[in-house]
Image (cartoon, rainbow, N blue to C red; front, top):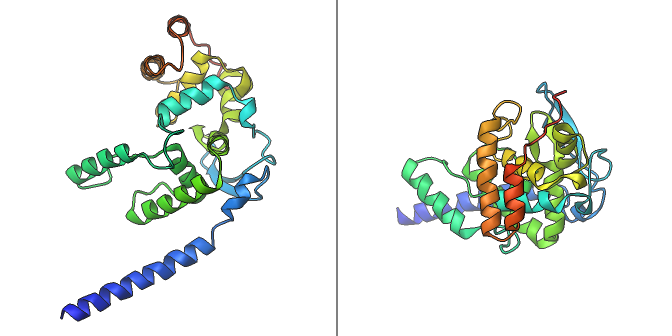
Amino acid sequence: MLRKIFISIAVVMAAAAVWFGLWIQRLPDIEDLNKPDPGFSIKIKDVRGKTKDWAIGVKNYSWVSLTQISPYLIDAVVASEDDAFFQHEGFNLDEIKDAIKTDIKKKRFARGASTITMQLARNLYLSKEKTLTRKLKEAYLTYRLEKVLTKKRILELYLNMVEWGPGIYGIGEASEYYFGKSPLELNLKEATLLAVILPNPRYYNPYIRMASVEKRQNYLLERMLAEHDIQEIEYELTVAEPVELREKL
């Protein structure tokens, strides 16, 4: 009986290994992500919910290099989404432990522990479904991305692909849509507002729920001050400064 169990387990593991190997072979070459034009696109949904292609790299008209993005925006997104980004190798183990405890307690995938690299892996290659299979794929891709790409390149790809609102993808589009300016021109107030939209861009819509957005924004500014990302005078001036959104199109 015990032998049959071991054989069954071995067969399942072998089948899983073959399936995983075939899946890996179908992936675009991750090494190509180092190129300005990796030569592939992902599927996204526009504001009407229709699917369209989103080019990865310079063939995308709204793509911007990291050097053309405000340092305020980079610091704000890292502080908001993954404050250990420059220290970890793709996985924040403390966050993962806390997420596992929460998932076990609630008996479902209730809490995420996604780093910026994990989010990039998901945006590039995977769906947002919360399944064990997807999490295993995500872990493998996160490991590979961290091995192949620099932290700066990971950030550049992430900021140019992440969703900032219904039909709004990439910091180039987001900066123009919300403020009518280039990503390099964003000030601290504008940068932190964009950063707090990211966890749930369809809910944290500043045109609809500005009070909720500003509450999260002030909390983020407090954290950035505590972590010495900004100075006291910057914090005080930014909190007091009114935000000026572009008139909604």
